[in-house]
Length: 260
Image 1 (cartoon, helix red, strand yellow):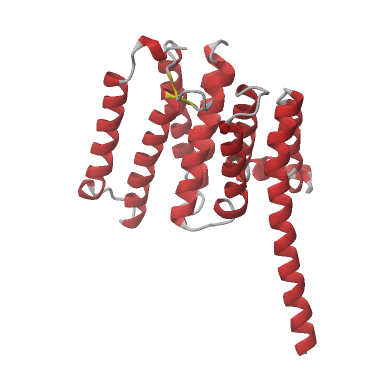
Image 2 (cartoon, rainbow, N blue to C red):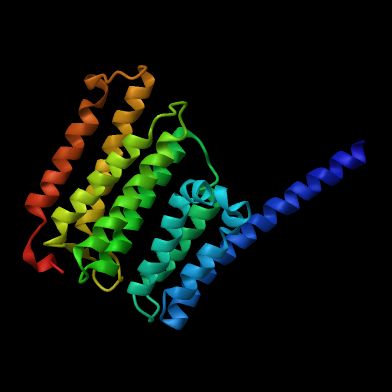
């Protein structure tokens, strides 16, 4: 019996070690292959292949599995696209993206606490919308609007599905529509903030939507905590903070010099 327990523990340790190794290889490989080839296609394929279990079931379960994996796909895909938009010359942003993706795969994604779930959604919103802005800035507004709807929907669903509340379909669609509406409003004057020669580019839209997502999370958790009733005193500070920061960004940091 003792030998069996020892063997089982050894297998679990080996399995965990290999899981970490493969995730690190995915993080490094997806960045390198995108930079070397100068194309986002192979990087996206690599991220998609890492989610092979999503389709390793009967077709009627595919949609449900894709929805469940949407946040992970958004983060992985967006990091590849941001890498692609950063060029084929190695820059600090490429190292940063590799480290961020590795941390996401090994540390952040496996966690399932309420705080971790909210953080995962915020990361998906921020990186997802950043990639969308960089990839569709000069394209028709419909591409940005649809992409932001998917991101908003996926992030909201990721948070709501963790609770015992079953009827969240309408709420997730509303969140997607809000994200799409904000994207449509911002599309006419897309503003980004550049940081020297690091290659780091932060779209104003990504910052605003991430702040709004944070505010939504605070409100939603308050509603859950009090059986469907919102106590404004608990969410007043997050709401005030969100409105203040968005106002400062829009009014004070929207000079044409940042316009793309």
